[in-house]
Image (tube, rainbow, N blue to C red; front, side, top):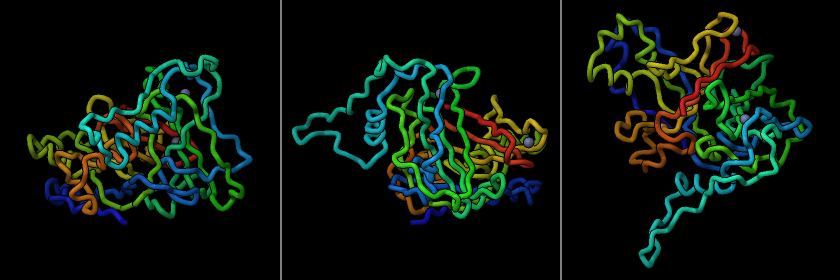
Length: 322
Ligand SMILES: [Zn+2]
Ligand SMILES: [Zn+2]
């Protein structure tokens, strides 16, 4: 089933005529729980990973024996975000969640033992028109991250790793892919989802507008521009970045060139209280559909990955807000 975003309640360029011509396309991915294959674009589906290429691992020091068992965390994610289930038994008792102890499950693991990364996303360019070109004509992007969100200077960031491939060069596929036994935090896990890519047009987020322009929008008008007319929530490729007021995302590559938003991953696909971005096919929707991947802890949980607009082989930059 395709997913269609309803038309914007009004044309952003009629609200601010200076925005005419500044629309930028983005591809909303519309992930929904499913069983993708290696030949599909997906969130947390199996990757088209060559059998003779080592699966990536994290060796940065953090306690990798302490946390949640992956099998417990996956079961909890299904309880929270999977198909609705009865929370009350026929006898009227509340059905408890599966236990998910946060404990030292693997005392034998040293802090730098290699821990397999989690498969987060796989995007084929044929499916995602706003996926920027990869280096050397690659048509497949694979994104993985460490199951411990203990990276960066403040030890609170995810450090996604990107792998670009030419899909036709992959012969034998690695199966099954290695998986960590222990994970640091439930919100870094995403459940397997198929994608329903849809191309939309976006405008710069309110804090990214020149002051003179943003200053003309006040009160409810500013809020309406920010929530309904500018940047789409949810998982997407390309388009304008979500711009936090106090912690703006990076805007320049180390080489000085502009950055392009490669991929945004978020908890919520739309705001349940103001569902202007909710696809028509999901209406009326269950609230839990608003977070189909299970990523993050609240609607503000966001990871944005940026790449150099001039040279896709330059190191990518990441902005994390969990
Ligand atoms: Zn790590
Ligand atoms: Zn660059």
